Amino acid sequence: MRSVGFLSERQRRLAWLGFLLASFQAPLAAKLVDDASWFLAVVVALVVATVIIADDAQRRRPEPADYVE
Image (cartoon, rainbow, N blue to C red):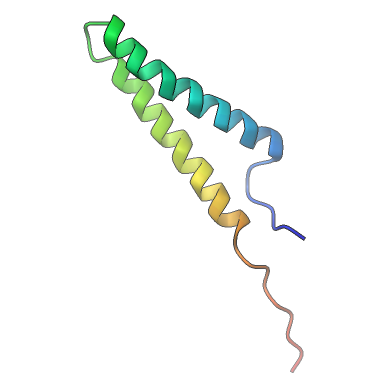
């Protein structure tokens, strides 16, 4: 049985969608806008990526073995 992370499958899909949207929006905004507000999209993408990586790490942890002594 696969161990469960702290995100549900739906939340995980939405996190991936948010990451992709933010990572595509940042370079587009950098070309179209003169100020540095595009940097917010980069920060959001990094935060969402960190959450996805943390959830992935928790899912890959082996389940604790129940040893009988």
